[in-house]
Image (cartoon, rainbow, N blue to C red; front, side, top):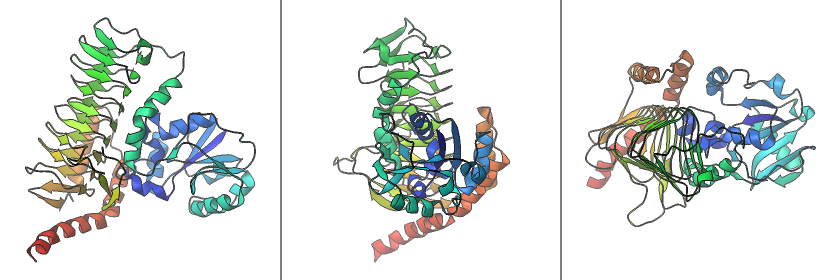
Amino acid sequence: MRLCLFEDQGVGNLEPLSFTRAVFDLLCGLSSLGRKQCQYFAAAEVGVLVRPALASLYSVQHPGTPVNDLAWLRAAATILVNGRWLPPAETPVDMSNPCVATIGDEIAYVLVDSERLATCSSDNLEECLDHWAKSLPRRPAGGRLMRYPWELVHQNPEQICCDYGFLDPGLSVAPASKELALVGPADRLLIDPSARLDPMILADTTRGPVVIDRDAVVTAFSRLEGPCHIGPGTHILAAKIRAGTTLGPGCRIGGEVECSIIQGHTNKYHEGFVGHSYVGEWVNIGAGTQTSDLRNDYGEVSVPTRGQPVATGLSKVGCFIGDHSKTGLGTLLNTGTSIGVFCNCLPSGGYLPKYLPSFSSWWNGSITEHANLVQLLRTAEDMMQRRGQLLTELHRELFHQLQAQTAAERSWAIRTQDSIPLRQSA
């Protein structure tokens, strides 16, 4: 199979997480959406169509992958896959003839021949998809299209269990250490041989698998409840990792994390609670930061999306934090909070606002613009170097573009908060 993963207009509703990465690089279960899509179709060749702002950086991060390469795209029959699609567990149906697979009115994937691809480009992709949806035979795609970040979190426990069933049966598994206490079936515990486990750790596989990936470190007095995934090189520091949690690579995690996804390289070293949340990369969560993930009246939670509240249909929703943002000591995050990229969240004795736009700060009870990008990038560079990663010029260019792109949102948020006291006095 020849696959091209594409982004459609729906990526905006997955902000702030989609600001800094292709939507198919978002995690759910044991891997990214893109990896699941490739596995579903057993792809032999994979190319991508991404937003122009991400193209250069994506090419460097994924050498050898055709990125926005129209010559490659038009060379042969190709399956174009919506990057927001979470495939079903069952195997795909016959893919020998052109067709379009949908979920509701949205396209999950489309198989087209080279003749139909001859006029397709990243500029007119939406028009081509609309035309193919009307002219090609339709079939149900199965699975789900991820429309908002909380849907990834909500699907995560089930997806970990599903992914575990498709792991390579020949995968090397280290025997559980005699010091590790196991509650539940032993065949749901997978420990990479390179992982390091201290004595006095408990793994509970009663409700799902516990996967400890390569070079991970789990220190004494940690509790791991399945389904959960401890990513490559991640350190668990006497923490409670509750069911439904996926931790990406290179994290440092203490305290309590419940049913959440952390993309990677994030510090939550100290005590504090994060629940039913999705946290990006290179985030620093200060000691004592607490996330509310349930309203006192058990009602439906709404989350600001592009500044406007969206009903989730769920009663348990935490926070969504973009890359390179930070919280100070004792920060309190309200139910359904959305924090952009490069934000600085400092405690003020109460909850932070539920919406903090990118490149802004919460300080002394008000939102201000965090405009010194030079300083922000210097801090980001220092943090990345501590993990052996480099902040490249392509990163800098992307962040400069994002700062300009989100300027109107910051201006609106600051202007709106200033008008609240006036409305109250009136």
